[in-house]
View 1 (tube, rainbow, N blue to C red):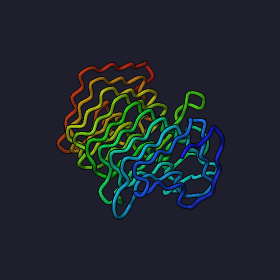
View 2: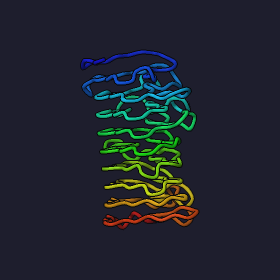
View 3: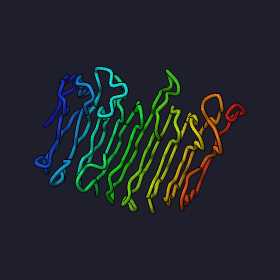
View 4: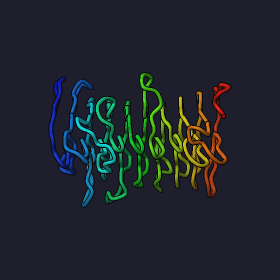
Length: 276
């Protein structure tokens, strides 16, 4: 199925759904193919199943997902929902770069049957999440994320707040998944990235820019019972300011339980007003 460049508006309580029966098929747009959802408290696109089997060998490319009406505080307004899926590729997606804010831009909830594994996610913008931009809460192995860009605010409006981590990876069995280039920008949150029960996870390049600490023990990188390797880390102008919500033992790295992070190359840009 191909979407031509243009605006495709709909109001569907379940959004558009790509189920298990779509095995081997392709859904393709041009990035100028905008899918705009007007239903409230609903996803825009769901890939995979939440019962029975799982979707596999599906290719989704070149779509822009967008909300046309406010989704403020609505927990089911997760723009891209990931159910059980495997051996699939999602690429060239712009998720809520414009339009109303989603609750989460990408969400893989724990309710899927067997999770996500051996998938490829490439060239994805996931923006404006009220809670998180990307939240993975279901196990799976062998997934590859490449060129993932998350931004809560933007260069025009400045930093915006989300109540959780911008990238929230709180799932077991992601031991051998990898991230290529990851960018996180313009966010005020408890952490930029949060990893829980991630053992052996590798990030090739992590760039965090204009992140502002908000909450007790806030840190751009927070680990819980996790062991992560970061080959290249750039922290550009992180803000630890009490008046903005920073409190307690803030730092560049924080966490609890047995944890370790191995950073091979790290560059931190600080300005004199970054810590107050």
